[in-house]
Length: 178
Image 1 (spheres, rainbow, N blue to C red):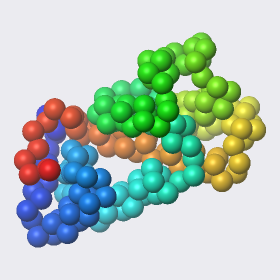
Image 2: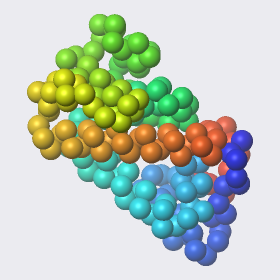
Image 3: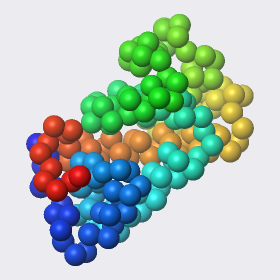
Image 4: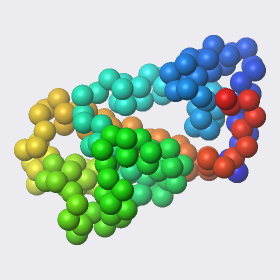
């Protein structure tokens, strides 16, 4: 159970934003119902994550591999549960999802995927990215895609840290979220 109650979606100050979340995401997930305690934070978060997930030109499969690897590294099951089906729709294989914990020795990843996963690991574990890891990813991606990749890794580290600090879980009862 979450450490604090989820926001009341019937409060006048959150109603409009709750409707926007519902329109853009299809429903109000646990994450957004918690974020709605602070409408300015929730609104900024929605705009940022929409840009990352829907307006970025980074390949969807790479994006989802990043998100799933961040979830593994940060021990964020809610993030993984939400994104595993999306990853599969974006072309990530079940074998790739299953091998994420030990991707370095798995044979199911392309050179680009390996470079992206190494970059994700460096950013998530150490913040600073060693030059050889940066060189490997920049040999595979354009500068624009390197920026979008970096923003994606950063964004989903933010998501997992928020989820885990407040202990948000998919099995929590959330009144009025749909």
